[in-house]
Amino acid sequence: MVDPDLDLVDRALSGDTEAFSELVQKYQKPIYYTALRMLAEHEDAADIAQQTFINAFRALLTFKRQASFKTWIYQIAINLCRNCIKERTRKPRFQDIEEVEMVDGKPMPFDRLNESSHADLVSQAIGRLPDQQRTSVILRVYQEYSYEQIADTLGCSKATARVHYHHGIRSLRKMMEGI
Image (cartoon, one colour):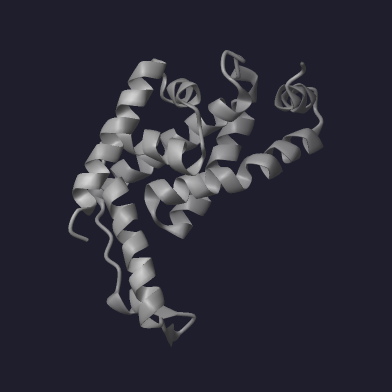
């Protein structure tokens, strides 16, 4: 069976710009949402998604097909997210409390604030996980990756991917106790 992504890669390499646009359309949202879950900021996630496709286009000739295109593009995105997280630790960001409580210039209803606060707490807890655990949890829970796909993306064995995921979930449970 011919992998449709590989067909699009071949077409893109032979000069068909529409073929690469199809790959962007197919993976743009999943890459954005993965970046959003890793970074918890819309602007950074959008930048990472855009930079992922720029980097992929520039490196398309180096795509070795040892893994699927999907795995390869996620590796690029995850590496960019890791770099962004490292950069953040060098330059701390502050968020105004009014930005948290306001939506479109109006106060957020308490029930929505409470729901979003809980989601924010989960996102913050995921953000505190060690890198491999955080990536494994995000790919498994939000992108529904198999352990084999996680292993390909992280460059580790399937068993190691499974261990990262389970340790991450255990750590999340401990962090979320009492919330």
